[in-house]
Length: 272
Image 1 (cartoon, one colour):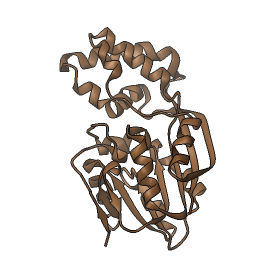
Image 2 (cartoon, one colour):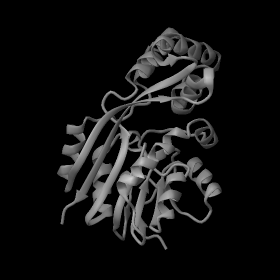
Image 3 (cartoon, rainbow, N blue to C red):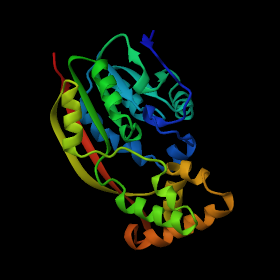
């Protein structure tokens, strides 16, 4: 039985985000599997042990949650997106999954570790998210996470913003905000809440997008769906063409689209 309180499950955002978003879970798994596949290295850093109690914060479609469970750990996957959790339950019907907002809930029993991959940049209230993480951990428990860091997707976002302006939506540059902190900013936030940072990295990860010549369009449809829904349908195809035109000299190489990801990876320990 999972003991928790103050759970909400009314939104559709992965990682328990405070950013409203509707996710296409099937498209996420079929065209953007790189998001969770890169997380395999993060699991090695966590080094889960048999019998440990672990929270996967922002579990999405559950692939990494399942890998954590294969270590023999007792894993709970948490996500705010009902669509993502439905896909996770279809993939792994025996997993423990919770639909909730990490900024408005608490677990009654502590965890040995909190793990999070590619989710925390969706939570704009980073302070509340870190409060939640700290409250989840037992003294000496560890927090291992990777998400978008300072400079993440700068070129891609500049190009998409230019495309929005070209089709009459210059204000669209400010839609769909995300949280991309520096090492210093996030380390300070963790330390304020009793999480001692043991290591932190900020690194470039130029990432190939699946789908060949359609790769950038697939990425925009998945990760910018909020902004696409806010423009008139007749302008969507023009917007995608404008985005490709602007981005092609920067992020298209040898028949392959790329996303200019910058990742922040942290390991921290909760004090006594």
